[in-house]
Amino acid sequence: MPDADLLRRIEMLENTVESLRQLPAEVNRLSRRMGRAESQILQLRTEFRDEFSAIRRDMATKADVGALRVEFNDAIAGAVLELTGAIAETRNDLVRLIEEQIAGAQRQTKMLFEEVIDRLKIVGAANPPPSG
Image 1: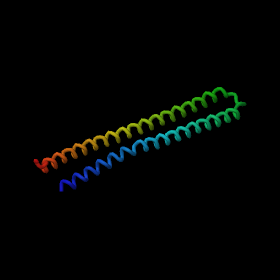
Image 2: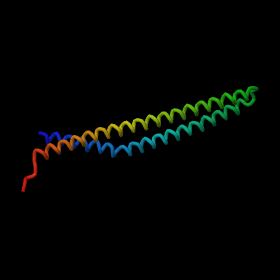
Image 3: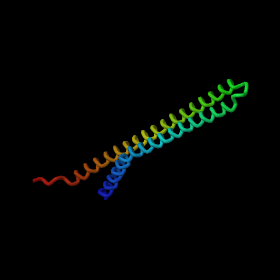
Image 4: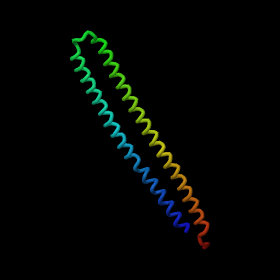
C-alpha cells in the first residue's frame, strides 16, 4: 500500500514539474497578446488624433478654435493617460499572477520531494541490504 501512495505522489510531482515547463510558453503567449493590445491601442490613438484633427478643420471657422484645441488636447491626453495606466495595471496583474503560480508550484514541488525522500527512507529502513 505505501508503494501505491509513493507512486501517486511521484506522479503529482511529475505533473507539477510538467506544468512548470509549460509556464514559459504561457508567458510568451501573454506577452504576444499584450503586444497586440498595445498595437491596437496605438492604432486607436492614431485614429482618435486623425478624427480630432478632422473635427478641428471643420470647426476652424468658429471663434472659439483656441478653446476647442485645448479641450481636444486635454481629451486626447486624458485618454492616453488612462490607457497607459490600464496597460501598466494589466502588466502588473499578469506579473503578480505568474509569480504566485511559480511560488505555489515551488512549494508543492518541495513538499512532494520531501515526502518522496521520507518514503524512500522508510522503504530503505524496511528493506536493509543483505549483509554479505
